Length: 99
Length: 130
Image 1 (spheres, helix red, strand yellow):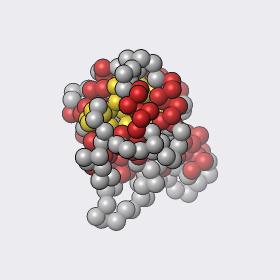
Image 2: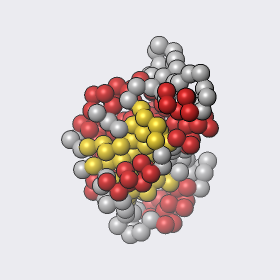
Image 3: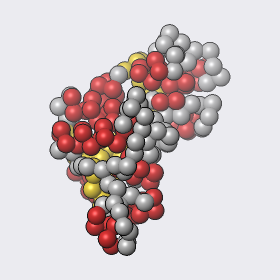
Image 4: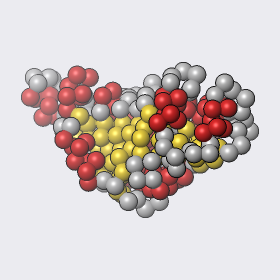
């Protein structure tokens, strides 16, 4: 399953809920303010890194760039454009939007 | 692959409608089909043709209308959500005794069944909201 998270983990707990529910082999795509979860050196970075073994993380690059966060994304988070977003929804059989 | 897209938020306050639009254009560019776009809750505010943003800003509503015209998209607005928020087509305006309608080109007003059917007919349902 593909999960999308569109809120900062410092604003809402949807990211927290998402990674607790995401099963092994699933993917999490961070979009809109959700991209803040992809940053290096934050209070959730360690949690993201720990989850990386079971979950693949992606962040929507246009949203990363729009927020001036280019170069601040932690290693292991894959950047995708909108075409990549579409490809992820094709690759996974269901999409869960955490709103 | 067939997609149904659900938009739960209005334009300009949230990024949801922009993200949904960018996703839709990317899906169409990749050769996929958009079976339906369903506007629900505050998402119905994407369907008023009276919106007049500043000229140097994007026109979220016209963008949807233009995309619908270009790709024959089915843009469906939830009737109950629309009535609450003052979005009406000619039929709805007449039915509810209003003296004007405001629905933008390419949008149509229908029921929640259209969302369910869209979810059944499409291979993927992708939801955008706040």
